[in-house]
Length: 134
Image (cartoon, rainbow, N blue to C red):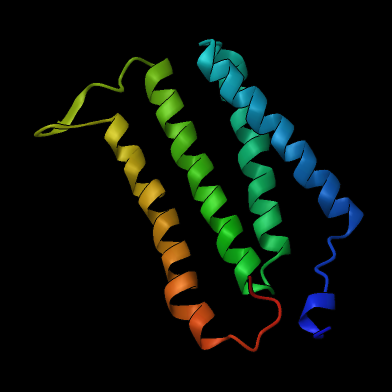
């Protein structure tokens, strides 16, 4: 058996607990959005986004983890912006031409795609020997 097949990526239990709690907050935020419960949805932005930033910071030494966690952070940012634009009834307001306020959420969504494109198209091919990359 090759050495690569026997390698493991271990996550400290405190980090795993935080990641699991992050999922709970994220689900409550999205449930609140779906049911149009404005106060809960808005309140849940802070722990959902905050924990994603902490997770990204804690994984900053591992490029693959950092890139994926930054993509999640900007995804949550886009998601929260879109939710708030709907909550405050401005989602369909025109910004420019046919671009609405809701479309501005594409900025962080595309940022996440660009972060992952950097990782998969530029970083990973040049670092195949790095066992920490996915």
